[in-house]
Image (cartoon, rainbow, N blue to C red; front, side, top):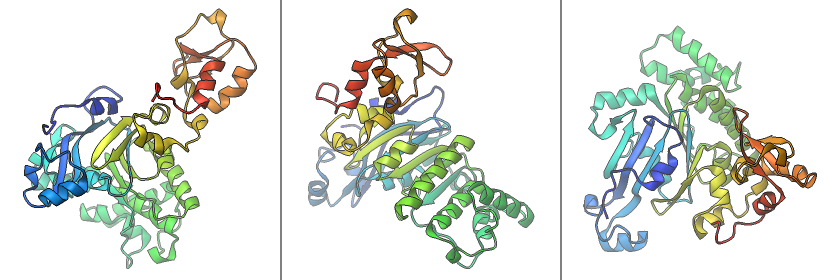
Length: 361
């Protein structure tokens, strides 16, 4: 085994647009324990976690991971506890030093950068949102949001004006004078989100930010992040163990197991074409009709005379059922530019409604 510093098929699958990705990871490893570097590329590297630890005294939290995140995309890493996802996101900002591999941000390998460059990266270009809010209890909400700007040396007037704007953006207008313990958990997480946005970062790293919240508040926060992403188009790496959250927020989803990526794909493809039983178990209870779209199940385009009406490629299968029942002809599928790119019929919708069989999986 090599350290896989060149792009892999998984990394290629993760790239959804041309040009240099904002974040690029190549062959990233993180091994904890004595002589960790000896594990990378060794015969022991593929051993199950317990066996590797028994033999070497090391734990391989991240194993040979490669992926790209294009500008403005949300890349979701999901997996069970202990899969390595939180370690991976900390390697991206070098809160944890990778054992091997490359983490490249805007073309710069952060392992080769100076301490000053890294400090500037964390101050102005990358923000993290954690599960635990980390708000300063003795400071007002306004000052919590403005804290990063204070570290940057911004004037009080400037940072308070920016913090007020961010509170408005996340729906906390008028609460700047409150203290954190006067707010609900959901409101506190909104303060954390406002703080992360205050310095207008290029990249946002979320490490299971909503896992401690009640289900209804969690759903509201997911909606809030989705809304902000539509408006701000940040480059995001989002860590979660919740598949519904991943499907809701991700442009690309990586399923992680025992330090490795099992599948990297679009939300629709993960649901429609799981690569193995592990991923299949993850998506078994997902309502497929709300995830799969006309563009994902369409066949080759037919002549316009052979079709009955049109639907957008983004139309969910749940909305197609009544349409295909009402006509025996296929329905043309059109892209964002209004061009016909395929067609759907009753058979395609029926296949989409069924569980993936062995051939499709």
